[in-house]
Length: 410
Image (cartoon, rainbow, N blue to C red; front, side):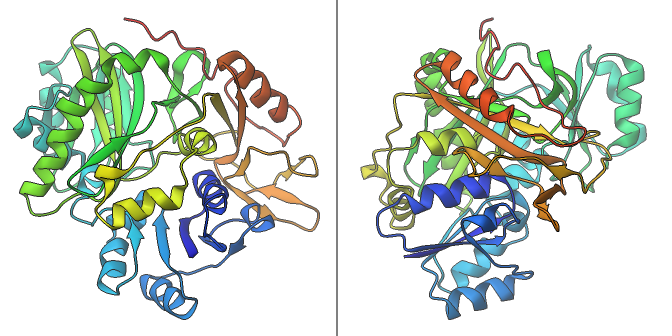
């Protein structure tokens, strides 16, 4: 089996590594990939949907796995299916669970799925008038894709006005939403549209700085598993995952692939913060190293509508991933700084935003590297991750020192 992975970041690097552990996989290609991924795997710059389809046909690609949300939201999976090429990703319609937060919120409301109270504002003037409907903190969400950075938390009226003026209004509007008190967890459902199995829990760290301060980012680190979340697994599956998948089936657009459930565990139980139509990043960099089941077997169960017979197993270990970001991220940041990194490359180092220079690698993205450590417990995994991280450096590097230290209690 030859596998093509679409994407260019740390998640795709982790996917390539995981696929190569699968029995029967003889080649992994990443498009476009990056210079760091290219050390170990072939990278191919395929710029359009047609180029991807032609490449799959000419190179006998047996499976396409789409990593990021943009290609899914733009209909790549639909075109691959139409061309007879197996793909792991939901349809463009089903991907509205991520590409339109308003679509997702209204569907949750209709299905009685627990989520934060919200109001849709069609324009800036209407949004400003509706601010009085909420107390602070207040959450303001852009409707469309925003690479994990389309959410603002306003602590007062000044914050709210600033957030509204910097948020892009789509034709559908923006969401004003109550701030949920609690602690976060991420759960992924592997589904063929009819049945599903869920993974272990992970916990993402979105804010830029320690103690969950600063602006939201695409993710500054993660760990898995999250033992405190297990108490809520059955409730999440029964009250959130099952009804959202049933709703998609009833609409005539079954959701096939991997569904990310971003959750807040509140005093009233689990509530949905958001859905994503893919593996998370950096959650993938902790879940995939712990995965014992062959990733190809998971994909085949999705494609053959046999998830009902799928058993997914994970190592009895803990993984912690820490993201090294460029100074200034998630706003403007400089590029081109040399990266000092040990050779040979330690295991668990995933390249996100790098490019080749005359001598080694230089930074080229907001998130530059993701470093994953594993151990028997959270303390050992953190020690491993930060020890690896200490051997990597570049000018202005930014990272959190508290990944995995949250107190998951109400």
